[in-house]
Image 1 (cartoon, rainbow, N blue to C red):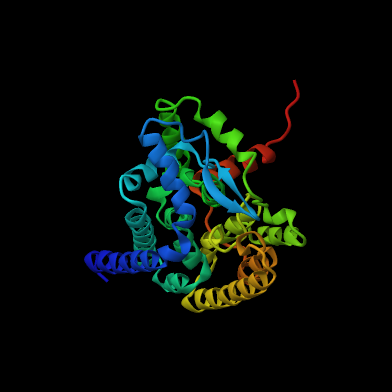
Image 2 (tube, rainbow, N blue to C red; image 1 turned 90 degrees about the horizontal axis):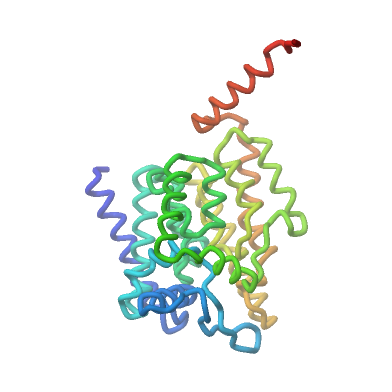
Amino acid sequence: MTVRRQIAAACAIGVAAAVISALLLPLTHGADFAQFHFHARKWLSGGNAYSGGFPVMRATRVVPEPFFYPFPTLLAIAPFALLPLSVAVAAFVGVSAALLAYAVISRCPERLPLFFGPGFFVALVLGQWSPIITAAIILPALGFLCVLKPNLGLAATASNPTKVAILGGGALLVATLLLQPNWPAEWLRNLHSMPPHPMPIQLPGGFLILLALLRWRRPEARLIAAMACVPQLMYFADQLPLWLVARTRRETMVLSAVSATAWVASLLVNIQADRQPAFSSVPYVLAGVYLPVLVMVLRRPNEGPLPEWVERALAKTRTLIGRPFRTA
């Protein structure tokens, strides 16, 4: 497929995602993106995005939810905040989907069935950042974007550290200090009031996910282990990067089908029990996403390239260990 056709196909997927997002707006009211939009508008109008909060329903009461993201995220949302919410959410979802689609079509078209899984669909509904982080894993040149959602970005960078992700992301963080020097302290303060975002290894049976390290030379194994060690919302969208563990079209289809079954089961059970599915789907995510990808990676040999700088460091370590000990 030519580059022009790849771009056209990616744009078509982006447009389709934007249309679906717009159609769902009366039901979602912008979901998570509405909060990003609100805080970015506040900053553009001269206010402090890290003070005050966006009103959201928590259990039986409305609470002001503060901004939980680093300042680069605010900058990325700012262009969309210039638009009305109804247009902005569709535009954001469309751009995110198109970026991920181009990454998949150009580098790993066998993974296209990930667009039919709940990881992508829930991210679309919520207006979340995981499609962009997933695209940044596939296209290393976008690695600096990992700072936009630091928990997933940290896992992505740990699984395959690149200079663009480390130096580019670090430079972006430092540059934002010129705009608001105190944002790190305010951001960390706000994180104390964040709703539950557990690390999977802290959950019952979650430590078994680290069995992926038996295949530590494979980047997808390191991704699984790293994802298990970062806080995340256990509701499928944050787990979208794990779809990259699937290596073939069949594996991607199986993962999307199994996770979709788990998602539907989560919706039926939690809605019937009058629980919020976003905060009550832990066993369904573990069984429907983490377990399948763990099985996939353990079926593969422990082979694969490490980042070049890691290989050099290991070579130096072997050399030092192999030298005889000299005494004075």
